Length: 369
Image (cartoon, rainbow, N blue to C red; front, top):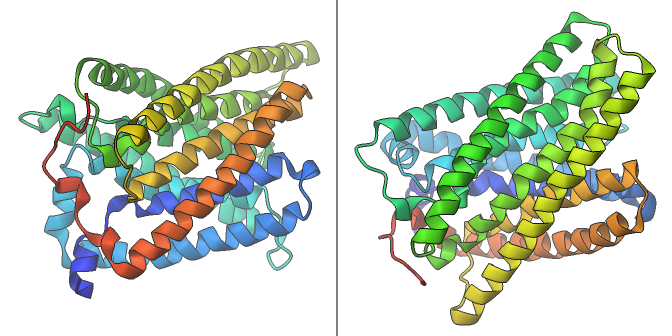
């Protein structure tokens, strides 16, 4: 395949590799006391995710310049369009990874300014794309049920990621008007993401029950359903500290907020456990019936599992119960193995050029009943 064609068919979902690599940095961080050389692993994976981000931005930018019609076609395609959000998500997740990883060559204040810039640019991209994509879908003459997948959850999930990094920034800039502003934005994004998650989850869940499942190469998108409640758990666990940093709260109120956050967080995490088991069951059933081909959609296995692993680790930090430690350890090992396999297969597919075909625009078929 010629280089021009590779750029023309550069899928918007490539940045899922960046966010999936960066989320492992955070997963290592929450279990750092149990992992030898945790900081060194964090630095390596953070540098790798940054390198991936820079490299992928080149063909992504060239595609907008030389093939704007191909970009517009993807932006209007019900399956491809949600994956555009992976770019701003990768900025925010990279910011979270950087916030959790001190670098000897980067002064502390400079590190926080970089984190702030990643948060601002990522948040603007996330809300801008969410508004644009919903507007495009509203103006479509018809969107067929079989074109919906749990990939539609990516824009709602992206708005929920913003408060995770925003809570840390709120605490860091507490005492300044910037800290209060960030907290306000966090709460707004939390409201947007929570309601959109419920709306989209209901629509797509109905489609999966009443219609044939999507084509087999889109099977990994089922795992995206694992991410929203895992991310909400993280937001809730960190929100009391952000509120305390900006608002004048007495100790009784702070204690109550932390208790409520942990109770609701564990409940939401419980749904994540349920969805993980469901996604695993469905995936294995499909794999037994027909071979699951490798595609960029395999990155949908990684990030949601990473978000679940981080949420499990955060719950373990708040409540040192062996239940969370056991599930967290299994999740972390599985996450690293799945990431390694997907990363290697992605490199192979990129080298051979097989990942630069336009899979999103193949005829929709019901792959299984």
